[in-house]
View 1 (tube, rainbow, N blue to C red):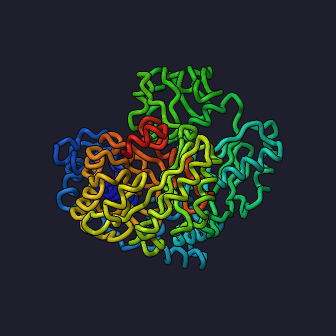
View 2 (cartoon, rainbow, N blue to C red):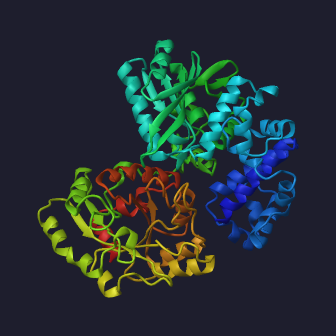
View 3 (tube, rainbow, N blue to C red):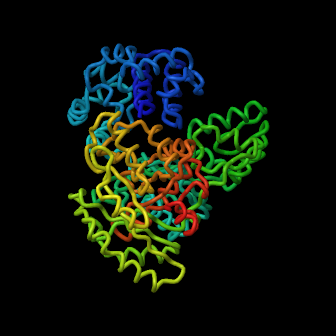
Length: 576
């Protein structure tokens, strides 16, 4: 957790320095350090204890001192000093799409705007137009962006972005105006949330493709329209039923630059900087149009050619975060990442016996139709009162139904488990005598989220060490945009899980995505087995598996790392 906290403060320091007009290299050093901390698999607290902070790429002595200061005191004095120079609320203006540090400085120092409400009022009164660089259109865009920021609609859940991408691709194919089309950006890298959507296409008639794009159902505004780039704002309903909008950029590429554009616009920024620097050292130029030697393009029609021009293996999009993947590609040591087709089952599935919406038989049939070899039913234990948790007697009473289902199935097995609450001191909600009668046990926290770090860690360690617990569910309990993670020493929990043979979950519920990719990678490095599950409460939720697998790929996991990519016999042996 400290990694993310320090990264947030470094990003804020960079923004404050930018607003104050400080030197660019200082700003970039803090931004780079923040990105390294966000993607760091190691716990920075442990690195501080070992005196190895300055070994993190991009972290020099001065930044290492500030990291150590935060770990030991919970504050960074320099951050506090800079903060004191700003009125409360000024930095919130950076959350508004279209406002960078330089524009925030103008709004603050020339118009006295110090918060989102002040910006909205100024835009409504057309005061922004008094300042150079803020025209009528800019004012209108900022007014909309303020509303988006205040409503928390700046980013879309991955599941919603996937649905939007699917509808765009289907629409463009139906119009027969494009020869190729694919999503790029953070969506292709399977980030947990998406700020906007980048769509790349090849079209013989670019004008026809652009016209078809702006006529899509749901387009509420065209923000830009040109021969090679069209930008719209698209309305959609998110998976929880709320109306939202998102910006979608269509870039129309030449066929000879398809691979170059796909590589460039997929990102990430740090990954692209790394490979461009490699190209420059070889006397080459690499951009969104291809790889060039002097004026001659030597690669660009495919992504593979772009990497091959630098003697690199093609790098899966989910790995492109400049976390060592380029070195692996150069030495031929890239892992064979898990694929959606490797998944053989799902262990975290609820029915209407607790807080699901469909009966056991319907959820089982939905899993069977997906081609799975097995599915685990894991309804809540009794203490989960909000989820209408089952008593121990009710949980065990379903054994006969499961046996009956298994007798009538060929090549498919139903496993009867439970998502059992971890109580205050780490004891389980059901007695051991009940747990041992089930095929497997998921242990999860659903209460006491505010326990101090030491107590919360001890609570989870005690639970995963229970010999009847097989899997730790949504370990940090975070829910994106609603609840932050519990205070936890994850390294201690991973160590306990690895020692006890308890798997750790990537929960693919779009609001949870817990563990995150960096956390899952750290768990693997600690020797843990990972389970990718959907936490399904309806049969359609089983489709969320693709997002969990995306997170697993971002964590560099192989099929052998993932419990539910194993054969049933191997799974049973693990549970035993």
